[in-house]
Image 1 (tube, one colour):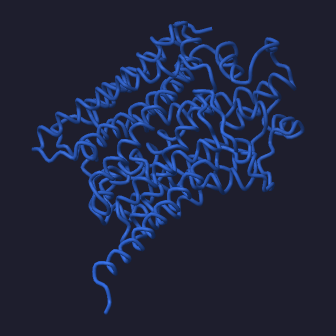
Image 2 (image 1 turned 90 degrees about the vertical axis):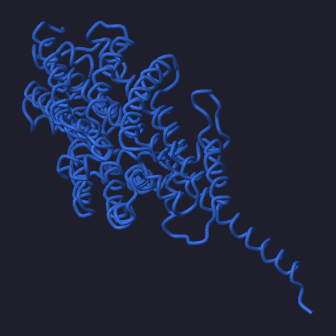
Image 3 (image 1 turned 90 degrees about the horizontal axis):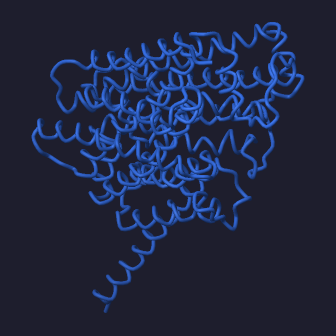
Amino acid sequence: MFSFLDALVLFLYLFFSLALGIWVSRGKKTLQDYMLGGASMPWAAVGISLIATSVSATTFLGAPADVYGADMTFLMFQIGAFLSIFVIGYVFIPQFKKSGVQSAYELFETRFSKSTRRLAAIFYSMHLLLRTGILLYAPSLVLSSILGFDIRVSITIAAGIAIFYTWFGGIKAVIWTDVLQFIVFFGGGLFIFIIIAQSVGGFSNLIGLASAHGKTKFFDPSLDPSSARTLISAGFAYAILEIAIRGGDQQFVQRYLSCKTAKEANYSSILSMVLGLVVSILFYWIGAALYVYYSVSKVQNLAPNTGINEVFPHFIIHSLPSGLTGLVVAAIAAAAMSSLSSAINSLSHTTENDILCKADNEHKSLRRAKLWTLLWGLLGILAAFFAATQQGSLLKNALFFTGLFTGPLLAMFILAFFTKKMQSFAVIPAVICGMFSLLLFHGIPFLKITGPLENILSWPWMPLVSLCVTLIIANLIHFISIIISQITCKSTHPTH
């Protein structure tokens, strides 16, 4: 159970996170310092921050549950992550750096129009707010069950600390607290894995038993697109989602721009991919270890109706030594705080830079950016409260919003990079069509509306579907506009 020592460890971690965020960002700040760290952040810290933002508490809790109930085939996602690094390094980062933009979506005004820039920023903000609510709610649900707090109290405490240091220090506070949070996050997982391995007879015995029961399967060469656990889905279709997030998500782009050069930004991107692979392997192995611990070696018994999502929290509460439980709870809180702080900092930047497009003096812009940080933080808490009222699958809801916005946004970047005459009147309706195309394959899960083609493609395909529809519609409208223009020109200037 949660002891006084555990509570002390958790309190000290939360206090140190707050103190670190304030200390690293002390001194006078300009808007560029607040939003981009003066474009002088160390690439290693940026790389760690990228992965700390990416993994979230769903990795800490969800990855072990997935392997406990199935196997490690979702490790094939790392193929998509590996492929995405090349696209980001050769296309996206150089484009962002040489264009001199201050945000991901500023590029759309230069290439298309201010309305296109605002539309992209609004879509991104909607997606990130809804996703943040889910990412904040899920770990708070576990924290409330461990600590005995009401779920809303857990959400508010974790969010309040993250909001304060983000409001005070901006991106510098976010990046350096992310480094601390990643250390606690990864260290907590490593300690758990070592403890379980020792409990079941050592690492070699654990590996042998997990393998014998099918938990170490990590590759499925099947080409079935209806299953997410196949090479074509998890290995290749997922690459589009990785490219969309790493290349078009302001949380990532903001960190690339905080590095001194494109080369250092690429180093940070590669480091985040490598660390992502290491983290995935660790937490998938925790899931396999938990299966051996409870279902094979039967070191302890679970209640008959324990769901796979409840196994890891049960282990944390009942099987960890005093002090380490507090560290693991701190790791869960760290993941939640990292997700929120990164989100509200990016949302503040996007609002000030891309939605308002303000050109006021430095002091007014910085003051507004801080106010937006507070507002988005409060909206993030409300989004988490809303997520707590939903009865459906949180994962399915999160995947719906991710597929809804990331594919069309990636299409906008492709059109901006690789077309010269495409106009905003073709891009905007194409984006809307791309979003609506997902209703055929995914429905609307939180409204319990199913799509007529829902079982044909698994969820990794959703960004690819919306991407392709957006590109096709945009080029079709552009082609039709050219035909109409030529016909109009001929009718206005008839040949004799």
